[in-house]
Length: 234
Image (tube, rainbow, N blue to C red; front, side, top):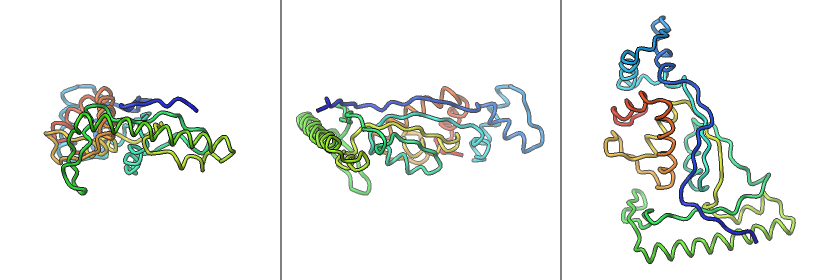
């Protein structure tokens, strides 16, 4: 039997990016017939601020990014709800899935003190948290052992994978334009200054925060102004 590995944090990597703050400004200026090519930072920032404030969103669609994500399958289910993105995911039909599974870190709240419709998560008692992690890992070991048994007996990968839980680690490419990424971040993060409070699950929020860091490096003015205007996508 393969040795089961555990992970508690997603991995997020920028694969490729097109455009920058200047490109978005140029896309907006073309509507006036000027197609400005200047790089006056104050003028560009002023225009981007106007676009963000008035929610003129189409110029932000002229920049895009492809991001590689490794996370638990349950987070992928939530990510795929954003249908404006393009996805290519590690296939369990064509290759054996890796024996790597998600376990919650000590600071991951585990107890719902809200409702089923509006969860509010609180930390578990340390003893309960430790028991849950141990028991979860035991379940992973059992499921993956069964998975390998099925493969050894000749069961096709696409059928053998049915035994595997949503905690298994998978990888995917996700691509969309910057406007689409801003919509994703507005729903999958929750900051005090957000105009609309999101209520994301902990794991997908960890993915989103890392994506936000990457986009801030590539589009510093846009991300600054997005925060200024309440983290609402234009």
